[in-house]
Length: 124
Image (cartoon, rainbow, N blue to C red):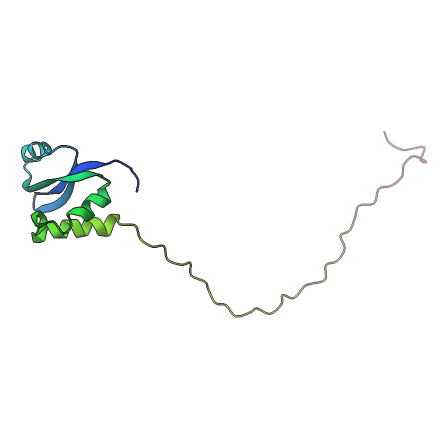
């Protein structure tokens, strides 16, 4: 998870027909949600502080969240946030290749330097 924050209150609420899981550390969060026109607000206190994932798993079978909208929001949250097992890397099966043909490389020509020490007319 991206965070290790712990929460003592978890629940669901609907806004504009969309139900989502909500987290808080105080039941007074209900007033804030009502102020912002949320409906179907259901928040419960947890027996101990929990991470978001553990809290959602704890309320999944709670009777207070038996409605279809609440169960759908919980399922969506778990689908999005639950850790997924990493798939094994795919290995490509390829046929063995024929050995590459090598070309003969001609030696590179080197520049010849003339010895000018014996010449009298050698330029400086």
